[in-house]
Length: 183
Image (cartoon, rainbow, N blue to C red; front, side, top):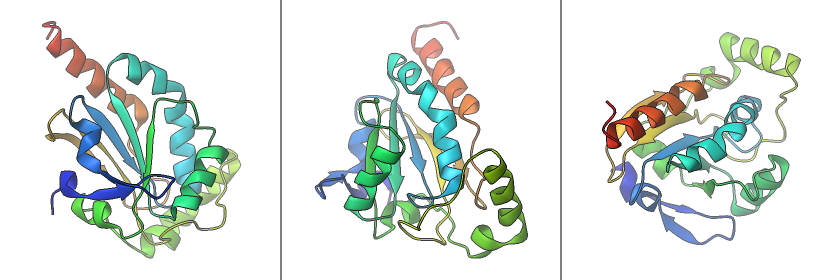
């Protein structure tokens, strides 16, 4: 199944075709491990200040987790995402994760490198909460061009492994420069 063919749920439990996120504009799609992951919280802390910039560039931001719709609603509140230009969904069946070819690994969650990352994240104030989704599922970040072409893919190998937000924003800037005839 292609990533665009997958249906996800919003916080109310309504089904949404994931491809709508990039039907009329480019989109950055961030798959979080689960809604209480320390690494994901760190990634969002890096991404949150860039959301308005990405919106101004005409690039949508989509966050997909694997918990229940109620856990998604709690995540939105805890991460202070309400009012930001971001679409938030959950995929409890992990269909989008499989379509994106994201790994599912206990070693990526509790292996030595993952535990080392967790300790470093804790020192920076990012701690795990109660698991809200699939504990073993790894995340990823994708830049999907309008219409569905995947221009960038980072598939996380372990907790705390995510694409640098600055790198993904650079892709968005380059895409806008190309569209404007500057590249």
